[in-house]
Length: 235
Image 1 (spheres, rainbow, N blue to C red):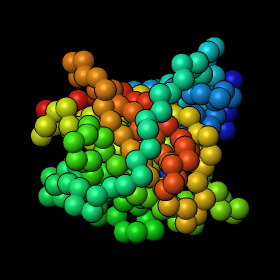
Image 2 (cartoon, rainbow, N blue to C red):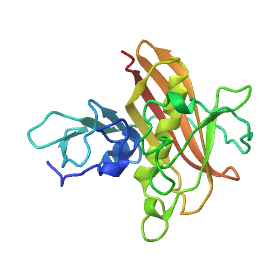
Image 3 (cartoon, rainbow, N blue to C red):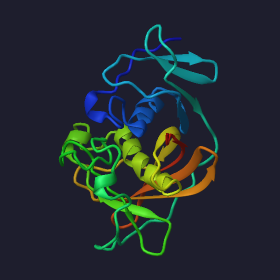
């Protein structure tokens, strides 16, 4: 059965010319009737392109009409591990990547060239003595429904790049892209609610790198968590 099409608007880009992986996964996951959904990206999700969601047995395939499969989604049972909250980020914590070395400067989630109110500008930092990255994030009204609740796909986007930077730490000087993501949302934040995003990487096997990320309120209430597999795309 083919469902109505979905689209990733140009605002929500990741690498140049393609959608932010977490945002794309979140949009796709909303089309799967399950509490926990795993989305695998098979190729860069295109921007401003109508895509069909086709149910094929236990999975859902996403593709442009007559085109190749962009992503596959399916329900999963394995719970997402939740990282502990971070309640204090030192003012002098070092950035996960030097500004001059950022490979995706216009990324919706982590691009330093995005203006406040346009991109999320989640620029994670190293916590001293830990393998954890973290940053503060306060969602604005452009990310929410009329009732002030942030849209779920935005939460997926917020969880995406922090895990990516944790993965990048395993390949110094290299570049990785999102390959697979699963997210669990307990509660979406509201406009103006200060949040903390935390992330770490827990394994590395060949070109694949595992990462976990989580979203909390400033006082430690758990909001969402994700696990992801990143693919080392260093040439």
